[in-house]
Image 1 (cartoon, helix red, strand yellow):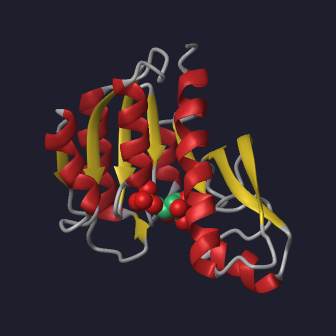
Image 2 (cartoon, protein in one colour):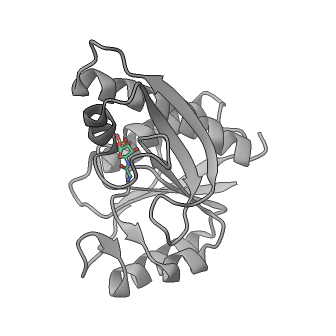
Length: 190
Ligand code: GAR
């Protein structure tokens, strides 16, 4: 199962996927490419470390969504790779129907809350400020409704009375690093 990872940030989840692959815990999945919409994203440094091609791909002209010329560039580049699965690991752009129709049923996203609670940006902060006692992370299929696609799996994290936003963030990230590779392995049939 050929996997393409899209990310915008430091890439700790992409790293967890690649570590799982290295350890033989990613089933039949094999990461073939990392793409980032930010030239300075930490995720791109994973390429040389793990021997996987990693590249910035210009998402212009929009700032928070992938549409128009940028979308066309992503569709063409990813089509050429013929992936079976596209994993959004901290890809901070809304995907539009053009992209989702080009890769129907193949795009999954990681979100740092127990959806449908706290969709959108700063989900960990939203949960912390709301005072919920349990939050977590979700892997779901991507549909045009932001953070609204069918849920594939979730992992819960308890918020203790002495948790700060920083300790909670660390706990949610640790849960993500366990959940996302496990879902990919499962989808690969491994
Ligand atoms: C992760 O916490 C992921 O859930 C979140 O971005 C972070 C990326 O971290 N994604 C979203 O909020 C998507 N709406 P990483 O770059 O270290 O993997």
